[in-house]
View: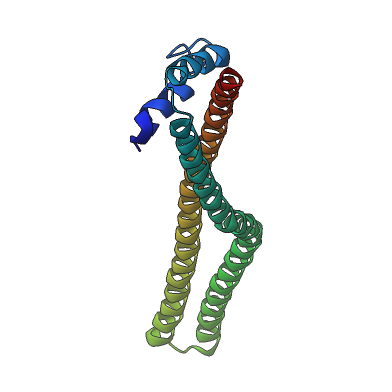
Length: 195
């Protein structure tokens, strides 16, 4: 946006540098530089149009920020509830997996004892089936854990993206509002000069 001699990127960079040692020493020095720049403009309509443009940009940023918040807050709530729920779910699933594994081992040992007592030879096919069941359960548990972790990572990334956008839009809103305040001061001075 380079209309009205206002380059948003340049002006925003100057504004963000206020007080950081990268630009203006403080807010007042930044404000004075903007005042000096627009005091030179003689037409009040020019400043009025620039102010209207900045107001429109500010409203657009506010609307965008509200849209981000409407997604960000539910995502954050979902992430927190998932973190709380998944912890207990993981523990329960792990306990179930251990239980099935122990049952399989117990059944195997029981089969061995029964085979020794009865003098029968243990059916290797039964042992194989039992081991396959344990392996499948282990694989399915790993798949479930992996899916939950992937979902959680995706949520974290989405929240991070929303947070960055939210911060950026909030900074722009403050910038626009401060710039509009300075333009109001210029307009006020010009109105005093006219009367």
